[in-house]
Image (tube, rainbow, N blue to C red; front, side, top):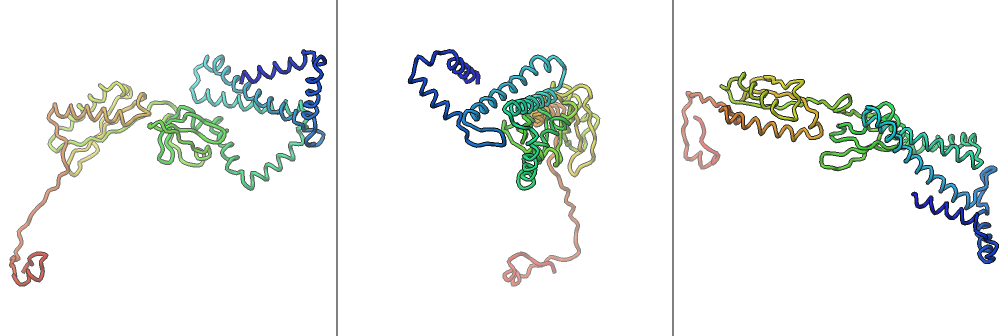
Length: 328
Protein backbone atom coordinates (compact mmCIF):
# COMPACT_ATOMS: atom_id res chain seq x y z
CA UNK A 1 0.00 0.00 0.00
CA UNK A 2 2.76 2.43 0.87
CA UNK A 3 4.68 1.77 -2.32
CA UNK A 4 1.55 2.49 -4.38
CA UNK A 5 1.10 5.87 -2.68
CA UNK A 6 4.80 6.67 -3.13
CA UNK A 7 4.69 5.84 -6.85
CA UNK A 8 1.56 7.94 -7.31
CA UNK A 9 3.17 10.94 -5.60
CA UNK A 10 6.33 10.53 -7.71
CA UNK A 11 4.32 10.51 -10.92
CA UNK A 12 2.38 13.60 -9.88
CA UNK A 13 5.59 15.49 -9.03
CA UNK A 14 7.13 14.43 -12.34
CA UNK A 15 4.11 15.63 -14.28
CA UNK A 16 4.21 19.02 -12.54
CA UNK A 17 7.93 19.79 -12.37
CA UNK A 18 9.53 18.30 -15.50
CA UNK A 19 9.84 20.64 -18.62
CA UNK A 20 7.70 18.55 -20.95
CA UNK A 21 7.75 21.28 -23.66
CA UNK A 22 11.35 20.32 -24.44
CA UNK A 23 10.16 16.84 -25.47
CA UNK A 24 7.56 17.40 -28.22
CA UNK A 25 6.90 13.69 -28.83
CA UNK A 26 6.32 12.98 -25.17
CA UNK A 27 4.30 16.18 -24.86
CA UNK A 28 2.03 15.09 -27.73
CA UNK A 29 1.64 11.63 -26.22
CA UNK A 30 0.70 13.16 -22.87
CA UNK A 31 -1.90 15.36 -24.56
CA UNK A 32 -3.45 12.30 -26.22
CA UNK A 33 -3.48 10.40 -22.93
CA UNK A 34 -4.97 13.43 -21.18
CA UNK A 35 -7.79 13.69 -23.74
CA UNK A 36 -8.55 9.98 -23.36
CA UNK A 37 -8.56 10.14 -19.58
CA UNK A 38 -10.73 13.26 -19.41
CA UNK A 39 -13.26 12.17 -22.07
CA UNK A 40 -16.62 11.70 -20.33
CA UNK A 41 -17.96 8.17 -20.33
CA UNK A 42 -21.35 9.07 -18.92
CA UNK A 43 -23.13 11.83 -17.03
CA UNK A 44 -24.84 11.37 -13.68
CA UNK A 45 -26.84 14.55 -13.22
CA UNK A 46 -24.28 17.32 -13.29
CA UNK A 47 -21.37 14.93 -12.67
CA UNK A 48 -19.18 13.89 -15.59
CA UNK A 49 -17.68 10.42 -15.15
CA UNK A 50 -14.39 9.98 -17.02
CA UNK A 51 -11.55 7.43 -16.79
CA UNK A 52 -9.54 9.96 -14.82
CA UNK A 53 -12.44 10.36 -12.38
CA UNK A 54 -12.62 6.58 -11.94
CA UNK A 55 -8.87 6.30 -11.37
CA UNK A 56 -8.97 9.06 -8.78
CA UNK A 57 -11.94 7.34 -7.13
CA UNK A 58 -10.07 4.03 -6.89
CA UNK A 59 -6.99 5.78 -5.50
CA UNK A 60 -9.16 7.61 -2.97
CA UNK A 61 -10.81 4.38 -1.82
CA UNK A 62 -7.45 2.66 -1.40
CA UNK A 63 -6.12 5.61 0.58
CA UNK A 64 -9.28 5.72 2.70
CA UNK A 65 -9.00 2.00 3.49
CA UNK A 66 -5.35 2.45 4.48
CA UNK A 67 -6.13 5.43 6.72
CA UNK A 68 -9.04 3.61 8.39
CA UNK A 69 -6.95 0.52 9.11
CA UNK A 70 -3.99 2.57 10.33
CA UNK A 71 -6.25 4.68 12.55
CA UNK A 72 -7.64 1.51 14.08
CA UNK A 73 -4.16 0.29 15.01
CA UNK A 74 -3.17 3.69 16.40
CA UNK A 75 -6.36 3.83 18.45
CA UNK A 76 -5.50 0.51 20.08
CA UNK A 77 -1.80 1.25 20.60
CA UNK A 78 -2.05 4.79 21.98
CA UNK A 79 -5.46 4.85 23.67
CA UNK A 80 -7.26 1.56 24.30
CA UNK A 81 -4.20 -0.35 25.56
CA UNK A 82 -3.69 2.31 28.23
CA UNK A 83 -6.95 1.34 29.95
CA UNK A 84 -8.12 -1.91 31.50
CA UNK A 85 -10.66 -2.84 28.84
CA UNK A 86 -11.66 -6.38 27.94
CA UNK A 87 -10.32 -7.57 24.56
CA UNK A 88 -13.85 -7.98 23.22
CA UNK A 89 -14.77 -4.40 24.06
CA UNK A 90 -11.52 -3.16 22.52
CA UNK A 91 -12.34 -4.99 19.31
CA UNK A 92 -15.83 -3.46 19.24
CA UNK A 93 -14.47 0.08 19.72
CA UNK A 94 -11.80 -0.42 17.05
CA UNK A 95 -14.29 -1.76 14.52
CA UNK A 96 -16.80 1.01 15.23
CA UNK A 97 -14.11 3.68 14.79
CA UNK A 98 -13.03 2.10 11.50
CA UNK A 99 -16.61 2.10 10.20
CA UNK A 100 -17.09 5.76 11.18
CA UNK A 101 -13.86 6.81 9.45
CA UNK A 102 -14.89 5.01 6.25
CA UNK A 103 -18.39 6.53 6.25
CA UNK A 104 -17.08 10.04 6.97
CA UNK A 105 -14.36 9.69 4.33
CA UNK A 106 -16.87 8.56 1.71
CA UNK A 107 -19.14 11.49 2.52
CA UNK A 108 -16.25 13.98 2.25
CA UNK A 109 -14.97 12.40 -0.98
CA UNK A 110 -18.37 12.41 -2.67
CA UNK A 111 -19.02 15.98 -1.59
CA UNK A 112 -15.60 17.06 -2.92
CA UNK A 113 -16.29 15.32 -6.24
CA UNK A 114 -19.44 17.39 -6.65
CA UNK A 115 -21.95 14.67 -5.88
CA UNK A 116 -25.16 15.96 -4.33
CA UNK A 117 -25.62 13.81 -1.25
CA UNK A 118 -29.34 14.54 -1.16
CA UNK A 119 -29.66 12.52 -4.36
CA UNK A 120 -28.81 9.43 -2.33
CA UNK A 121 -32.36 9.50 -0.99
CA UNK A 122 -33.50 8.06 -4.31
CA UNK A 123 -30.67 5.52 -4.20
CA UNK A 124 -31.72 4.59 -0.69
CA UNK A 125 -35.25 3.94 -1.89
CA UNK A 126 -33.96 1.74 -4.69
CA UNK A 127 -31.71 -0.08 -2.23
CA UNK A 128 -34.69 -0.63 0.03
CA UNK A 129 -36.54 -2.29 -2.83
CA UNK A 130 -33.48 -4.44 -3.50
CA UNK A 131 -33.32 -5.45 0.14
CA UNK A 132 -36.99 -6.37 0.01
CA UNK A 133 -36.45 -8.63 -3.01
CA UNK A 134 -33.16 -10.37 -2.38
CA UNK A 135 -30.78 -8.69 0.03
CA UNK A 136 -32.61 -9.45 3.28
CA UNK A 137 -29.94 -11.91 4.39
CA UNK A 138 -27.06 -9.49 3.80
CA UNK A 139 -28.88 -6.61 5.50
CA UNK A 140 -29.93 -8.86 8.40
CA UNK A 141 -26.38 -10.09 8.97
CA UNK A 142 -24.95 -6.56 8.76
CA UNK A 143 -27.44 -5.18 11.30
CA UNK A 144 -26.86 -8.25 13.51
CA UNK A 145 -23.12 -7.56 13.35
CA UNK A 146 -23.71 -4.00 14.58
CA UNK A 147 -25.86 -5.38 17.42
CA UNK A 148 -23.08 -7.78 18.41
CA UNK A 149 -20.52 -4.96 18.43
CA UNK A 150 -22.58 -2.42 20.36
CA UNK A 151 -24.63 -4.62 22.70
CA UNK A 152 -21.84 -7.15 23.24
CA UNK A 153 -23.71 -10.42 23.96
CA UNK A 154 -20.84 -12.14 22.13
CA UNK A 155 -17.35 -10.59 22.01
CA UNK A 156 -14.02 -11.52 20.51
CA UNK A 157 -12.32 -13.96 22.89
CA UNK A 158 -15.56 -15.41 24.31
CA UNK A 159 -16.08 -19.15 24.55
CA UNK A 160 -19.43 -19.88 22.90
CA UNK A 161 -21.58 -22.87 22.08
CA UNK A 162 -24.10 -22.63 19.24
CA UNK A 163 -25.83 -25.43 17.34
CA UNK A 164 -23.60 -28.10 18.99
CA UNK A 165 -20.49 -26.13 17.99
CA UNK A 166 -18.07 -25.14 20.75
CA UNK A 167 -15.22 -22.68 20.16
CA UNK A 168 -13.65 -19.25 20.68
CA UNK A 169 -14.81 -16.12 18.85
CA UNK A 170 -11.82 -14.73 16.94
CA UNK A 171 -13.47 -12.20 14.62
CA UNK A 172 -16.79 -10.35 14.25
CA UNK A 173 -17.12 -9.04 10.70
CA UNK A 174 -19.78 -7.08 8.85
CA UNK A 175 -21.50 -10.26 7.64
CA UNK A 176 -20.23 -13.20 9.68
CA UNK A 177 -18.47 -14.25 12.88
CA UNK A 178 -15.44 -16.55 12.94
CA UNK A 179 -15.30 -19.24 15.63
CA UNK A 180 -12.17 -21.37 16.18
CA UNK A 181 -12.73 -24.88 17.55
CA UNK A 182 -10.26 -26.87 19.66
CA UNK A 183 -9.15 -28.61 16.45
CA UNK A 184 -7.98 -25.20 15.13
CA UNK A 185 -10.78 -25.19 12.55
CA UNK A 186 -12.39 -21.85 11.72
CA UNK A 187 -16.17 -22.06 11.37
CA UNK A 188 -17.81 -19.02 9.73
CA UNK A 189 -21.28 -18.38 11.15
CA UNK A 190 -23.73 -15.69 9.93
CA UNK A 191 -24.15 -12.89 12.45
CA UNK A 192 -27.92 -13.34 12.48
CA UNK A 193 -27.53 -16.82 14.02
CA UNK A 194 -26.11 -15.22 17.18
CA UNK A 195 -29.22 -13.01 17.45
CA UNK A 196 -32.08 -15.39 16.63
CA UNK A 197 -30.69 -18.73 17.88
CA UNK A 198 -29.92 -19.81 21.46
CA UNK A 199 -26.25 -19.20 22.23
CA UNK A 200 -24.35 -20.40 25.31
CA UNK A 201 -21.63 -17.90 26.21
CA UNK A 202 -19.36 -19.58 28.75
CA UNK A 203 -17.38 -16.39 29.43
CA UNK A 204 -19.96 -13.62 29.03
CA UNK A 205 -19.27 -12.01 32.42
CA UNK A 206 -15.94 -13.60 33.38
CA UNK A 207 -13.80 -16.61 32.51
CA UNK A 208 -14.57 -18.51 35.72
CA UNK A 209 -16.58 -21.64 34.85
CA UNK A 210 -17.73 -24.63 36.91
CA UNK A 211 -17.65 -28.20 35.58
CA UNK A 212 -18.91 -31.47 37.04
CA UNK A 213 -17.26 -34.90 37.09
CA UNK A 214 -19.37 -38.04 37.78
CA UNK A 215 -17.70 -40.79 39.82
CA UNK A 216 -19.06 -44.18 40.96
CA UNK A 217 -17.64 -46.52 43.63
CA UNK A 218 -18.61 -49.96 44.87
CA UNK A 219 -21.15 -50.56 47.58
CA UNK A 220 -19.44 -50.98 50.92
CA UNK A 221 -17.06 -48.05 50.46
CA UNK A 222 -17.15 -45.26 53.02
CA UNK A 223 -18.86 -42.23 51.39
CA UNK A 224 -17.02 -39.82 53.69
CA UNK A 225 -13.67 -41.25 52.62
CA UNK A 226 -14.66 -40.99 48.95
CA UNK A 227 -15.62 -37.36 49.41
CA UNK A 228 -12.31 -36.58 51.11
CA UNK A 229 -10.31 -38.23 48.32
CA UNK A 230 -12.18 -36.43 45.54
CA UNK A 231 -11.78 -33.04 47.21
CA UNK A 232 -8.08 -33.66 47.83
CA UNK A 233 -7.49 -34.64 44.18
CA UNK A 234 -9.28 -31.52 42.91
CA UNK A 235 -7.40 -29.16 45.24
CA UNK A 236 -4.02 -30.58 44.18
CA UNK A 237 -4.69 -29.90 40.49
CA UNK A 238 -3.13 -26.50 39.56
CA UNK A 239 -5.88 -25.71 37.03
CA UNK A 240 -8.66 -26.03 39.62
CA UNK A 241 -9.43 -22.83 41.51
CA UNK A 242 -9.08 -23.00 45.30
CA UNK A 243 -11.89 -20.46 45.63
CA UNK A 244 -14.70 -21.27 45.18
CA UNK A 245 -13.51 -24.54 46.65
CA UNK A 246 -14.33 -27.88 44.99
CA UNK A 247 -17.27 -29.77 46.50
CA UNK A 248 -18.63 -33.30 46.25
CA UNK A 249 -22.31 -34.24 45.93
CA UNK A 250 -23.67 -37.68 46.80
CA UNK A 251 -26.14 -38.03 43.92
CA UNK A 252 -27.69 -41.40 44.87
CA UNK A 253 -27.59 -45.18 45.00
CA UNK A 254 -27.10 -46.55 41.50
CA UNK A 255 -27.76 -50.05 40.17
CA UNK A 256 -24.20 -51.16 40.86
CA UNK A 257 -22.44 -48.18 42.51
CA UNK A 258 -22.62 -45.30 44.90
CA UNK A 259 -22.80 -42.24 42.64
CA UNK A 260 -20.95 -39.00 43.40
CA UNK A 261 -20.35 -35.79 41.51
CA UNK A 262 -17.17 -33.71 41.87
CA UNK A 263 -17.82 -30.03 41.08
CA UNK A 264 -14.90 -27.67 40.51
CA UNK A 265 -14.14 -24.21 39.10
CA UNK A 266 -11.48 -23.28 36.55
CA UNK A 267 -10.22 -20.38 34.46
CA UNK A 268 -7.18 -21.88 32.75
CA UNK A 269 -8.98 -24.82 31.12
CA UNK A 270 -12.19 -23.20 29.87
CA UNK A 271 -11.16 -23.86 26.24
CA UNK A 272 -10.09 -27.47 26.95
CA UNK A 273 -12.38 -28.91 29.64
CA UNK A 274 -11.82 -32.50 28.45
CA UNK A 275 -8.10 -32.19 29.18
CA UNK A 276 -8.79 -31.14 32.77
CA UNK A 277 -11.41 -33.87 33.14
CA UNK A 278 -8.87 -36.46 31.93
CA UNK A 279 -6.21 -35.22 34.39
CA UNK A 280 -8.66 -35.48 37.27
CA UNK A 281 -9.74 -38.99 36.28
CA UNK A 282 -6.11 -40.13 36.15
CA UNK A 283 -5.49 -38.71 39.62
CA UNK A 284 -8.73 -40.19 41.03
CA UNK A 285 -7.85 -43.62 39.65
CA UNK A 286 -4.41 -43.53 41.34
CA UNK A 287 -5.88 -42.33 44.63
CA UNK A 288 -8.57 -45.03 44.65
CA UNK A 289 -6.00 -47.76 43.97
CA UNK A 290 -3.81 -46.53 46.82
CA UNK A 291 -6.75 -46.51 49.25
CA UNK A 292 -8.30 -49.78 48.06
CA UNK A 293 -11.50 -48.21 46.78
CA UNK A 294 -13.04 -50.21 43.94
CA UNK A 295 -14.68 -48.79 40.85
CA UNK A 296 -17.37 -51.42 40.13
CA UNK A 297 -18.40 -53.19 36.95
CA UNK A 298 -22.08 -53.17 36.04
CA UNK A 299 -23.79 -55.79 38.20
CA UNK A 300 -27.13 -57.62 38.08
CA UNK A 301 -28.58 -59.96 40.72
CA UNK A 302 -30.46 -63.04 39.38
CA UNK A 303 -32.90 -64.82 41.73
CA UNK A 304 -33.92 -68.45 40.85
CA UNK A 305 -37.14 -69.87 42.30
CA UNK A 306 -38.20 -73.61 42.34
CA UNK A 307 -41.31 -74.57 40.34
CA UNK A 308 -43.80 -77.38 41.03
CA UNK A 309 -44.12 -78.34 37.33
CA UNK A 310 -42.15 -81.34 36.13
CA UNK A 311 -39.81 -81.17 33.17
CA UNK A 312 -40.26 -84.08 30.73
CA UNK A 313 -38.63 -84.66 27.40
CA UNK A 314 -40.62 -86.16 24.57
CA UNK A 315 -38.17 -87.60 22.04
CA UNK A 316 -40.71 -87.41 19.23
CA UNK A 317 -41.64 -83.82 20.03
CA UNK A 318 -37.97 -82.96 20.34
CA UNK A 319 -37.42 -84.07 16.77
CA UNK A 320 -40.40 -82.05 15.60
CA UNK A 321 -39.48 -79.08 17.79
CA UNK A 322 -35.68 -78.67 17.69
CA UNK A 323 -35.88 -75.39 19.64
CA UNK A 324 -35.82 -77.21 22.99
CA UNK A 325 -37.81 -79.25 25.54
CA UNK A 326 -41.28 -78.46 26.72
CA UNK A 327 -42.67 -78.16 30.23
CA UNK A 328 -45.33 -80.79 31.03
